[in-house]
Length: 524
Image (cartoon, rainbow, N blue to C red):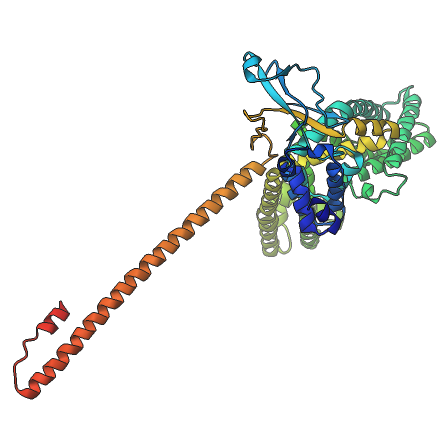
C-alpha cells in the first residue's frame, strides 16, 4: 500500500503514506522487521521532497507535525548518570550512544536514569537541499514541531555555530574600522583602515556572490537581509572610492556615510537572529516594519496634505522667523510633522494668521486626525502584528535559525558540506520507554511552540460542542414528548366536550335534563 501510494502521486494518498511512516505507525505494524532496514525511509524522504516542492504547504505542515521518534532496532537500553534528553546526528540509524553503558532492566540501574535509543524515521532532514526547500517553500509552521527542532539544534550546535561566531567577530571588527574611518578627526591610519575595509568588503562581496550562486538563485534576492547586505557592500565601496579621491576629506561625503552606516547597523542587527534572547525581538521588529508599510504611505499622504494647507495659511505671517517654518513645502512638511506628531508648535502662529478661524480649525483637524486617530490606529496595528508573531513565536525563531543554517552551509566548500550532511543523515535521541519497551513521548515535550496548547484548546472546543449538541438533542426530545402528551390530552378533552355537547342537544330535544358531568369533567 505504501509503495502504491507513492507511485500514484495522489496528494491525499501521498500524505497518508508519508504520515504512517513518520508517526511510527508503519514500523509498529511490522513486528518482524524494522522499516529502517528497508528502502522505505528513503522513498518517504523523496515523497516529502515532492510534497514540499509541488503541493500546498498545509500537507507538508501536517506531515511534519506528525513526525516522531521510533525505537532503534537491535539495541538495548542505556544508562545515564542524570535525567536529561540527549540528541545527536549520525550517518546511520544504528545506536550511536556507545559511550553510555547498556542495561537489561531498570532494576540494574541502581537509581540512575534508563533511556532507550530512538531515531527520526526520515533520513536527510539536515541536508542543505531539504532545509533550503523548506525555508523557501513552506511557512514558519513547518518548523513548529520537535522533529525539526532537534534537526536544527543538532546541526547548529555541532557544525554551524562555530562558523557563525567567527563570522560575527570578523564583522564586529569590520564595523569598528568603519566607525574609525568616518570619524571627522583625521588620522594617519585612515589610509590603512580604508585598505583593510576594502579587503574585508571584497570578501563579503565574494561571499554574497557565492551564496546567490552567481545570481542564479532567485530566492536569494527575495530576502530583505540579503538586500541589506548588498546595499551595505555597495555603500562601503562608494564611500571608499570617494574618500580616496578626496584625499581623506570625509566631510564632503556625510550623506553617503550616514546611509551606509544605517545599512551596516541593520546588518549587525541581523546577526542577533541567532540568539534566543534577541532573535524573537528581531522577528517582531521585522514583521512590524512589513505590516506598517501601507500605513506609513497613508500617513505621508496626510502630512503632505496638511503641510500644503499650513503653508498657505502661515507663510504670509508678518514675522520672518515664523514664516520660515512654512515658507516652502519642505520646511512646511517638517513643521507639520513636529506640530502633529511631536506636539511642538507656537500658538502665535494661529492668532497672527490672516485667516485666524480657518487656521485654528485646520490645526484642530490635523491634530485630531494625525495625533489621535492615525497614531492610535498605528498602535493597534503594531499590537496586532506583535500578537500574530507571538502566536507562532517558536516557529518563527526556528525558521530564522534555519535560514542562517542554509546561509552558512551554502558558503562552505562542497566537501565540508557533504561531510556535515553525511554525519547528520539520521537524528537520534535517548528517550524514556515503558515496561514493554515502547517509547514514552510527552506531548508538552515533543510538540513545538504553541501546537500542544492549540491542540488542547481544539479538543476542549470539540468536547464542548459535542456536549452542547447532546444537550440540545435531549432538550428537543423532551420537548417533543411533552408536546405529544399535551396534544393527546387536548384531543381527549375536545372529544369529551364534543360528546357532552351532543348529549346536551339530544337531552334538550327529548325534553330531559342534562347533568353536565362530562362538561364539568372536561373543564376540570
